[in-house]
Image 1 (cartoon, rainbow, N blue to C red):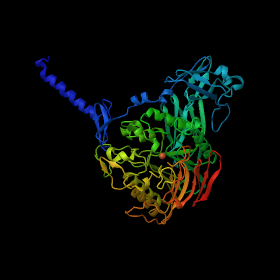
Image 2: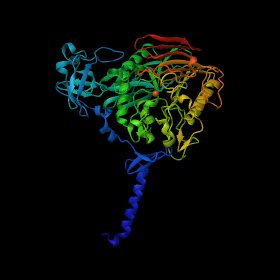
Image 3: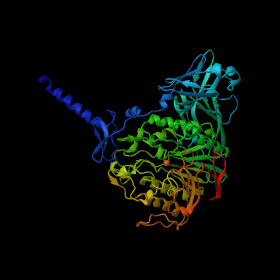
Image 4: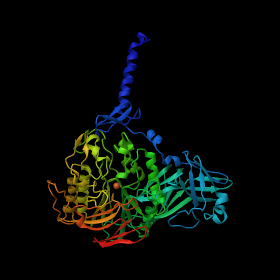
Length: 638
Ligand SMILES: [Fe+2]
């Protein structure tokens, strides 16, 4: 019974509770993120976000449901799972599974590219537990780390599931007295990025929280305590090479870094390009949970062997397309682990592809009724990408503020920071684009739910690209502008039904807040060409991927680039346009397809390929090598 004497306070409580509930629906309080106004037909229903799809309410497919539906592997299952014992190392993985543990030591010798070799025997993983008896197994003639004398060592290990799929490669360092003790050391890195004449960023991750130091030019830089580390070093001299040391406790990792040369110093140099290293369909190293490690490692070895000054990698590094951030973090970590031994002294810049999406999915997960995850600042593909890759931050903000922005006050789009950017090396400018921004994978559902189709460059990004091209056109030190984007303007094998073509269907375009944007995919392609070909004299090549092969295409004004029924305006190309596709870094292959511009195709290969650009002042030579066989696929002047 309600005490009538307390009626006013009761009403206040009810009022307060309803207000709180109303607020909770708008915010994250009860675990439901607010729905971006840029999307459509999403509502909150029964404490869940639902997609109102053709009069059916499709529930959000949750991580909890997914955990019950299929075998899941996540990064946190392998976090701090090693413990020293009297005889070696015990492993207690944070998942109950049976499998195999392969392992081996890092040799006690100076190695430019430190890598371990595996021991002949392996251990069983039972119910998530395993042990390595280092004293018994890896001593005497098997002690290549010399741990018995040095009282310390580093061990690499690999986890296989019960079907022998590779789940993770990891390394761990230890000290020894009466017992083995796990100590902090590198999980991945160091990686170099954001290179300019004066600055460079070093990033790496450690297995345990620690406070590493970086030493450069006898100056010691103390880093904050943590597991993910990043430092930007400044005050370097243009073109100078420096030795640097990463110190983690008593462990030292020595490498070199270089400040970019003064722009326009016109020294001869080489840079590398590739994309699409996501996993092949086979077991073994070709699918190291998310990527083709067998090919990626060979590519990295080839790139450093060729002394490239930087490596541009544009999208589809991993399988991705996940709803669980933790699962995708394992895939990124595996990718970074694979190339870590090679890339400590070579700058690497990466761009996003479609597989980098971290999704929110509705209904049956196999139907891919998905959008880019939100809240955008912590659960989008863009936000996760920026956690792992320290790219330049000089791109546009987001599509907020475009003429389609549904609310000038709120954030309705993910950020472009770190996934759209530009950089300069000597006489070369590189513009890195993202045609999988705010990506909705199933383009047929875009009119209903909103989002950006695969391959489309949205307004603010295009506007930014135009300004960048104009800036570099005016810059007397820049002779060559390269633009890289995951999706080809002209697909040639594997993606004729999408990229910037969609079998000639210009209806394909983003929908924002229930409205289609003005320009279709083919019109947008032409707007890009207008800037790159007709308004620029320095633009050289569009570097793309997505198609798992290598191709070089030279489109001129006589090339057929429209569908037969095209009644829109046609672009007049004032000079030839060159496109190179290299999506051949390990993903499953595609063969050549027949398209209107096929007569303009100069080279097509389904081999794995690393593209090297040998820059010598005005001259650009393209050298394409299969990293698996070292066969030269082609070597031509541009
Ligand atoms: Fe792709």
